[in-house]
Length: 288
Image 1 (cartoon, rainbow, N blue to C red):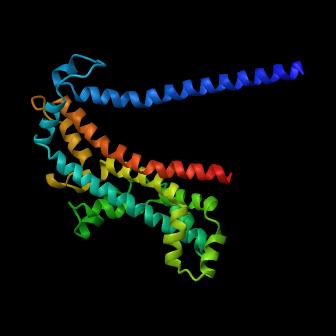
Image 2 (image 1 turned 135 degrees about the vertical axis):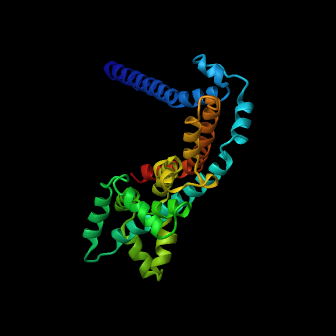
Image 3 (image 1 turned 180 degrees about the vertical axis):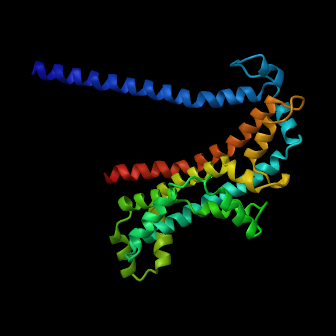
């Protein structure tokens, strides 16, 4: 009996020690992740002259001045925000929906070219965007979509990486029995996909919408090739133009404020969709 009591006390101390270590590690990781956002905020409140003097942890009083200079400066930042949100938002919704639909077709239906199509889509993942840039520009010029936001939205719908992720998630979360049961009950294929399969895929859809939104929001390469008009440029292009301004017009405070403005929508999108990810993890743990 004394040995059992000693072992139980020792086990309790071991669990407590592991819990303390876990909390310390999590707090440290949280600090490392959030520290850079804090530095961004601090630098957004400082003037160009103060930024040249060096690093500080204390905020300054030039936030509204920097913000006013950005909003009323030579670069149409508000227009860039709107364009970036249109492109990233529509690309995230359309890409995730049609990638899920494609993965659903490969997962549920049996047809002769199924494996060949799956292999081809995965092979497309290996081709860098830069390799196809010249052909892409020629195609855009041929179909008269140069200098339009449509040329940024439509190509983003075809995302092999999103398709692959959704297909792998379906393999573990969408049994064929559910689809067969819906068919027996008289549900159409369209209704089965939209009202039965999609709700099951909410956690995966939320993850891919976040990734797709962030990728298209931060995308500089493709818009720089296609967009020429100032009122159609996205935020990454405008920020790059701020950073490449000549010495007399360059203001690092404006650059930091612009970066802060570009990060805010991404944080909002993540906060809106993160609850679905947490719910999916909770459901998965209960099933396990």
